[in-house]
Length: 120
Image (cartoon, rainbow, N blue to C red; front, side, top):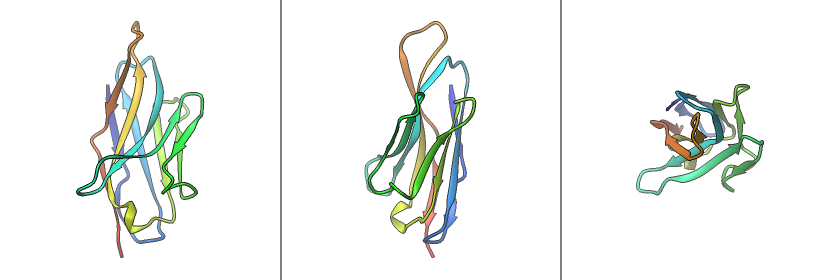
């Protein structure tokens, strides 16, 4: 199973970016998909997650500015980032918890990370 993230880049303060992440491989069901980020010298932190039943969880620092959504086939996740701030600068990682066919164990997987830089 692989997670392929895209959409990072350089944006000015107040601007917007949209991150995408697609999961591929032997997947029965993705229970949760989301985004974490890691700034230089800091620990990786939650940005937003969304479960298969639609429940969302956002970091306080992004509430009201970022929106997470899942693709129609539920194997993709998107992060719409608006009103961006320099503090949003980090490497953003896609994350998923999923079930494989014929197995009850819940696996998890990280994507490769995509750089987001907010600067004028």
